[in-house]
Length: 167
Image (cartoon, rainbow, N blue to C red):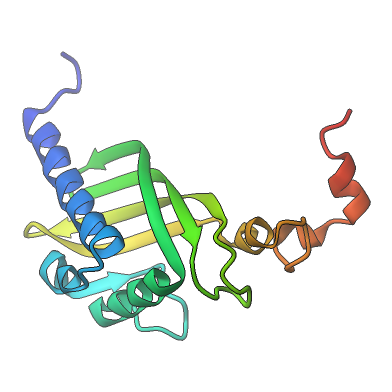
């Protein structure tokens, strides 16, 4: 078998299990103690917003806030790739809007948002994280009408939105 390394396959399974257990703890069980157990002491979150620390404390704060306004219904891993000490995943998150978020009161709407997570591991713990998610479309998904909440579709004229894809 060309390119097959049992060690890499095992490492990938271990990394995936660590990430799966971490997501379960913080997104479904609301157990933020997992942040201290799974993330390395010197952890750096390259996805952190400028006003929030890129540390374990910042991650705990962000998950705490997100859990108050969004109920995670499902996490789908679409692609998972391991190279060395890096695990990269394309994911689809399924949420329910259960609290005020981005200036929009709770709507109860369910929505999906795609993105990617890349993790660097060190000594069995997550040492770094990079993330990319299409958060700009969330206001439109929650507002119900394209452009109503100033999301990504607000960049286009409403007539353009209404005729998109109609040939």
